[in-house]
Amino acid sequence: MSEKSSTSSGSDEDVDPESGQPVELGGVLSKWTNYIHGWQDRWVVLKNNTLSYYKSENEREYGCRGSLCLSKAIITPHEFDECRIDICVNDSVWYLRAEDPEHRHQWIDSIELHKAESGYGSESSLRRHGSMLSLTSAASGFSTTSNSSFKKGHSLREKLAEMETFRDILCRQVDTLQRYFDGCADGVSKDEFQRDRVVEEDEDDFPTSTRPGGDCLHNNNGSKEKLFPPASLKDMNGIDFKGEAITFKATTAGILSTLSHCIELMVKREDSWQKRLDKEMEKRRRVEDAYKSALSEVKKKSHYGGPDYEEGPNSLINEDEFFDAVEAALDRQDKIEEQCQSEKVRTPRLTTLPLGDAYSTIGTHRFAKQVEEMVQNHMTYSLQDMGGDANWQLVVEEGEMKVYRREVEENGIVLDPLKATHAVKGVTGHELCHYFWDTDVRNDWETTVENFNVVESLSDSAVIVYQTHKRVWPASQRDVLYLSTIRKIVATNENDPDTWLVCNFSVDHEKAQPTNRCVRAKINVAMICQTLVSPPEGDKEISRNNVLCKITYVANVNPGGWAPASVLRAVAKREYPKRYTEPLRCQKVRYLFVR
Image (cartoon, rainbow, N blue to C red):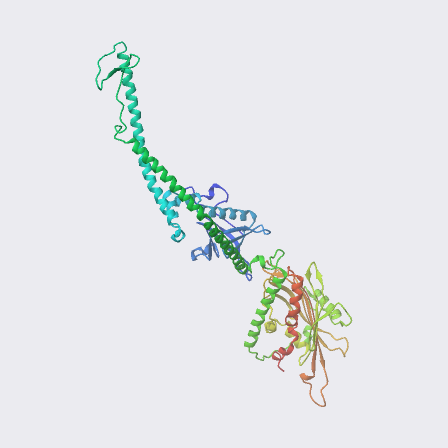
């Protein structure tokens, strides 16, 4: 998987020097689609604080298939997968995988940069929208308080209005007094200057003339000095200092009184507000708890089915949840199968069986030796009676059909062998084995296979088949590659019944290599059918009522993967009668073979 981007994260090149915004980043990432299709490569673009994805780079002109705004996104690098990123916005989650840890780090840095530059209060946000807080805006914010919260606060508002009036009066009085003090300072300076000049000029000359309002008078020491009549308090710029002082005192006293009243009102209301605040805080706490609980449930439901909850070594789903999910999925499949069976119309079709001699010889293909060993092993061990063997447990018994299981584990994987016996009237072993082996009629009885194809035909009696089974979430999907052969067993004496065998066992093939999409299961399955004919009564001809097919079915399956052993056994106990013994319900064969 290749990936290309327009910038390398974590450097100054990530920001456009003209606009100051992070530059666009694009590349190929694997995106988790759903539990059926798994990880798929998608073209992902990071631009203007938005993460979008397209099916491919060439299909960008058709529009994106989805997008996320990163303003409130939560970016989580996966704990175990070094290439994976989880991006969550509310109840929407994207699971992404980069080519390697370095590319994942690059994407995380770029996403965080876009997210940081988009948030309110960021440098770019301030450049775009500005940031100015003033008394006007603060006052307007205060004015939005509900009027109902001040229904009991008319006195406080009135006192605040009085404070505004006192403030205006006080400011005017301060200006008036300041002008008076400035005038006083100028008058004193001029008086001192004139007095100094008179003393210097008349130091030895003492005038004796006196006037009622005279300029010169003798003092008690016999000296004379220049006297200037003191200025009246009302003469200084026309300001009545005494009146202004009295008014100033009254104003400050009013301010202090109003402040005291305001403080008293606020102290009285503090307890009431505190109680209301406590109640609101408690309500908020309960609402937040309910919100977190609801959000957790929503996330659990929306994320259920994501890659963290599927079968795997680090799966977040426990055994009970795993079992419940599998049970629910199997129930849904059963309903679908029942509906399909009820709608399916069976029509008899003529089927010509090939002669048995064509299947009694050993093949010459490259797997011939391995096939012969498998056939001999099954004929030697599969037909042995299980009586007295305590390791085999009877798990299903329906009339003539009995299913046994033996518990075997290897490296924590359940490998329980299965053995089933059955007896069916009206069909021969040749017919049943051909019905079980022929891929042309496989879908008539096999309900667990999603699709299959013949990879290679080795001979008229041996083929290599690749098939994928329907997925039962949260278990991973399984596929199987196996060689299937049908063989007529040559009788060693004339009393031996007509015996046929179908053997399916796993092999490797270059045209069907394992993929990450499915877990490759290993199988070794055999069905041995023996035809027994009872003589008819009197002179009657032999009919199907005189034919009995004795069936022995053995299966050894290694499912692989990480499904819990307890879950596998519980599900297997339920599914054995349907999944493994469906070929034994041979009434369907009557619709295939018409004589």
